[in-house]
Image 1 (cartoon, rainbow, N blue to C red):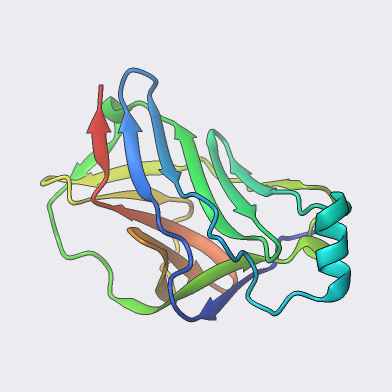
Image 2: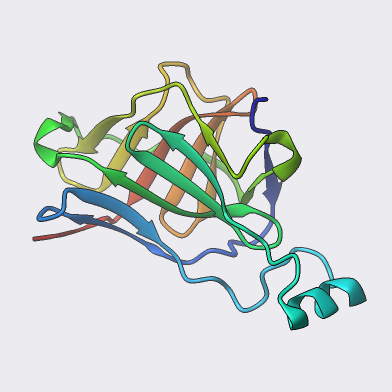
Amino acid sequence: MTPTLKFMPGSLRVRGAGVYKSADMTLEYVAPAPPSDSLRAPKVADVIDRGFGLDAPRDLLLIADTLTLTFGGLEHRLAGLDAYTNRQRWKVVKSGAPPEIAEQGVLLLEPASLEDDRYSIQAVPKYETASDARWVRIVLNDGRADAYYEVASGLAVGLQGGEITDIYLFDVTFTE
């Protein structure tokens, strides 16, 4: 099965930040869960299930080599990213304008489109950074995105035919 991704326009529900920790060689986008995690009004069954810890939503993972995209919450929205990557191997490109953002909202992963709670994307990510370090780009395939969507503060995803082509992280903090 191929994962089904769906973009839903609206306000940004995820507020987080990108961080590169050079000592650990990790690139992360960390976002705390918002207080209300659902795009729809809760049903009585949801409230009861949550109260007793039944059917707690589990995170879904899309994995590409050492990159993991985490989809969490009741709606399985893109909630985090982490990668093990050596910054010395990133391609430094001339600082240019980031892609034009078509809309903002949330990126959802349909749980029924996966056989399990994780799916391996057959891609080895390539990492690029602007010469002025304004952004980091993670390239998953060489195709061009149909559109770019801001799906969290400082995080934009390029989509083509329901697949992620590349991911931009803006204002990444670099630490030792």
